[in-house]
Amino acid sequence: MTIWRDIMVVLFFFELMALLIFFKLADLKRFRELLPIVFTGVYLRFLDHYILIDWLELWHIHGTLNSVLWLPMSADLTIWPVVTYLFIQYLPKIKVWIYILSWSVLMYVYVRVLFWIDLYSAKKGWLPIYSAFFMLSYFSLLFLFWKWLRKPYTIKKTSRS
Image (cartoon, rainbow, N blue to C red; front, side, top):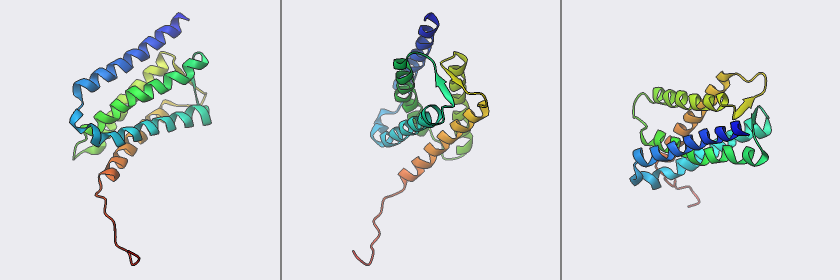
């Protein structure tokens, strides 16, 4: 049980660091502007967990039933919203794909640490490249949603209006 407690401490440390980084680096004047994309990021993380853990059962979270439910949700509601917020806040106008790749590598390392500390395990056949693909997909989708959300909203006149 000591090992499991150590794992929870590591995850708590990551969550605490994410919150501290948020309050240090986030431009809170943009909070209302960025909130929709943060919710989108949380939704994408929940969808990712649903697909990998619940539906396809490719990943297994270690611990008691309570921990299995709580641990991914706590990370999805602390770490990933902060990552999403800062990712969009600092989004450059040029070389966006290099920026997306950089964030993907950073969060890929985070996920690999979770595997390394034995919070997760994967079924045979799951390769680390798949995790890298999911990270790249996550940040690419965030970018595309952000571009879509930033488009001006116009109502087109039709023959009925």
